[in-house]
Length: 412
Image 1 (cartoon, rainbow, N blue to C red):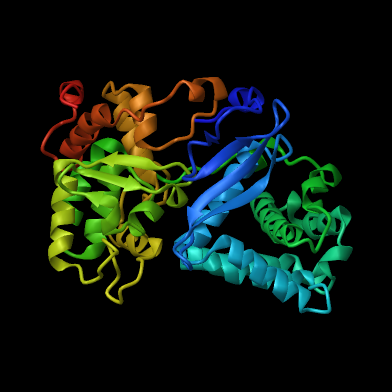
Image 2: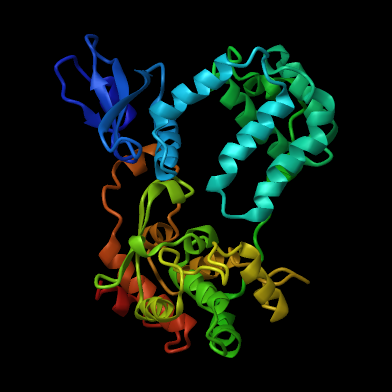
């Protein structure tokens, strides 16, 4: 994986260096030591020819910014679009317009472009509704080239302290709109970056993330046996598979057969579907494979593993309704367990049964925050994690008490 240290040492005669986390992203040497050019090599889905896309110069464009831009391009490619051709089409569209768009017009355009990549219908609506509620009445009629950081501060100030989480979301969405405008040269920069300097600092309690209610890990087997194993429908299959793999629901709901190798009992989630934008390999337990084999028998969609009866990606609400209907116990008073909360159930089980922290964190696909530590992690420990997930499955299904975890890990 390309690090800042490696990038800073690049010399004019060096060969292109792969970025490591985005397929085709490379840093090319220039005539000056310590400087390079970012390039994304890809096969155009429109022409089926190999193309190279420039993404700016290093260090003007950082490694993180280059990866973000490359991931944006990869998402377009996944949708069957050539990012270079799409850029030209957008430039032509903008050139053909005599007026700079207003903020509301830009937001609606960004929302329309982004929503095809979202699988949560509720999030699709919330994204634009929050802007319509809080931003459009204040700046929606203004053209984007006239907006200043103080204008966005005026949008956020009434909710920044009173509704801190909502305020942060509105800010993030305003930032996404202005980033789009900046990329299309409608504005000279993203003024939302400066908004924090004009707002009061949110208190620590306001910034603290609320935890998803989780089912205590010792109660999971009974829930699975008495509520989940009593039926053979897609919601039950999806919920149990999500619990068994300790995955995020968006990862399992959008899962395709092309990501699965049943012979090797491995599921590979591509980077563009992961929160950290890094490919994640998931070792499948025997029970997880059984669920997939059952889905092969009954599923009608050619690609989606857990498709809805109408052949679409199931919403997260399908599992949430199931948990509410069956009053799934949680560690939060008067609240039922959430799908995401089962990741915490897995993490607590791992801690209390002696699973190494590194294995547990890798199973959850958590990002390593320490840059030095991350630089030394060159393997995902798939074989060792296989034993962990088999032990977790034995606990979840009630076929083991979870006390012989290390023996199973040793088989990986």
